[in-house]
Length: 181
Image (tube, rainbow, N blue to C red; front, side, top):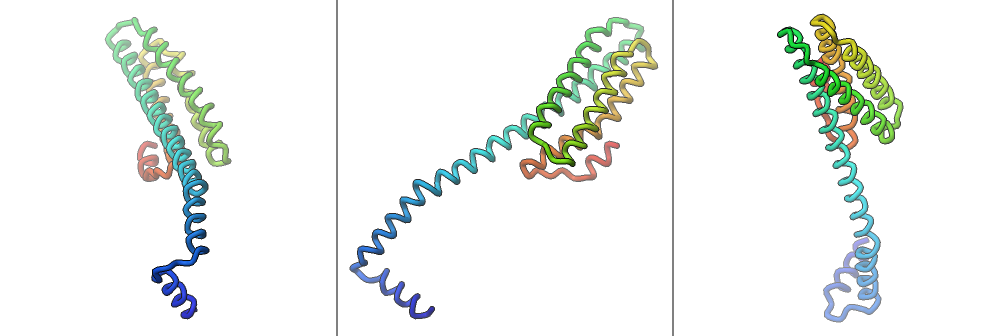
C-alpha cells in the first residue's frame, strides 16, 4: 500500500505525466460533467418540487381552516346580535369545507402509506362532521355546536399538516398536536 501511494505521488509530481493519466483525468471530468452533474441537478429539482408542494399544501390547509373558523365566529356573533344575515358566511364556510375535502383527496395521491391514509381518513371524517354542523346552523345553540365541531377538527388538521411536513423533512413538535386536543 505504501509503495502504491509513493508511486502515485511520484507519478503526479513528475513534470511529464504519462498519457494514460491525462486520459483518465479527461474521462473522469467528462463523466462528472455529463453524468454526475445532471443526476445531482435532477435530485435537487425533485426536492425543490416536493418542498414547494409541501409549502403550498401547508399554507392552503392552514389558511382555509383559519378562514372557516373565522366565518363561523362571524355567524355566532351575528346570531347573538339578532342579525339573521348569516347565509353568506355559512355558504363561504361550506365552500371552505369542500375545498379542504378536495385538498385531502389531492394529498391522498401523494401520501399513500398506511399511517398517512389513516390520518387522511380521520381528517376527512372530522371535516365532514364540521360540514354537517355548519349546514344545521339556525340558532345560537347550533352555531356554538358548529364552532365546537371546528375546534375538535383542528387536531386532525394539525396531524395532517405534520404528516405533510414530514415529506420534506420538516418536523413539528408532537407537543403542538397534543396541545391542540
